Length: 477
Image (tube, rainbow, N blue to C red; front, side, top):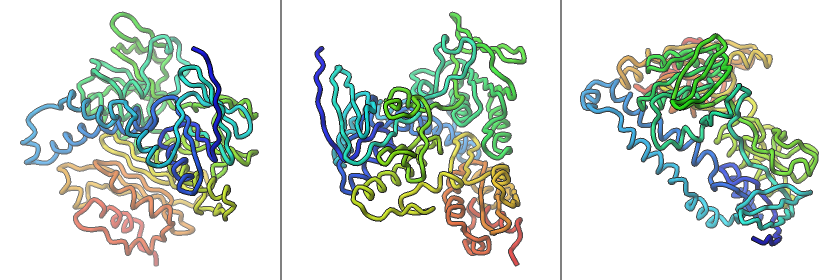
């Protein structure tokens, strides 16, 4: 097929059409600019089709069934087992059956242009797009280019791993049939969430982590999840390296550093992420291909007045909601700078992503859930804060006992003793994700503890844990 060359000019070019890229372009267009998104896969990106949405759809049915079985009356009504076929069908609907037609229609309605193909930077404010038919289009930006290409699953250097066709999060969340057995290498969010889901599907699950579980969180969070996974039938092997993986006609064989051998039908690798920047032309502008892209808090790349990045590629906070938060700042500031209007780039200003540093909220949808925001006690001490830690058993709250028989969980509040404000909060327990926004507001707004006493939690709700945390801390004099 012959190659033809076209060209076009826009105010803003966005590399990557996931949730982050969509938000950058949308905010810029709302600010009066023209924008084009360059995407070589599905518009909507990782979150829509292989991460947030399908994974949580897989987990929700599991959570609801377990919750019902913890409440007398409802428990007696639940007489069947989990319908895995129905769970997968619901997952398919959440992933739009891997069609991006709805997302494309949204782009059209928002006034954002779309060009499909592999986009590569080829000069200052220039992106060359190679289409699937081999055609080439040269795009020129009047004001800015923003990189929002996301990240891929990291495959660690384990002997034989790449030869056995391992699953990553993509394969795990898009399964058509459930394997009889699954080995999971990793101890982070993807590893623990998928262990939770597949154990409920009837798969024999073995999880192998070179350290503990969820090591970036408060230690008790990983400990409680490990205990729960074992209760759900998962074999959890901690502080153990995976040294070799092979495949034969019956499946995979995983060998560990302590001499164990685990046989499974499939192996899922969930050991982190790597930036999707290896083939986007970074070398043409003096940056390193395959590297994370550094930015300031307006998401501008140092050394450039036209290049921005947002989302996973920045390695600031690899979470969809944080990427979209960065995208809103980037799109707004690109529009402001293009128009020559004032830029609000002081901490917590309109055009900065200040919350990336010490106020990131996150939910891990294991059973029990983990909801956290801000700094852990260890992180706060490393940053030089004078810290006091307050823990409380959530199951002692009246609202928790109403919610489920035998409700157990832990809440932790990390306090900056000098300023008397909350630096971080972690909740572990059933449905604690619904407690998180109040904690996020407290951390972001730096609400003084003496004012928090006046934020009265309704009775009987699990939110009463806030009162118990404050009582345990002691009322300021």
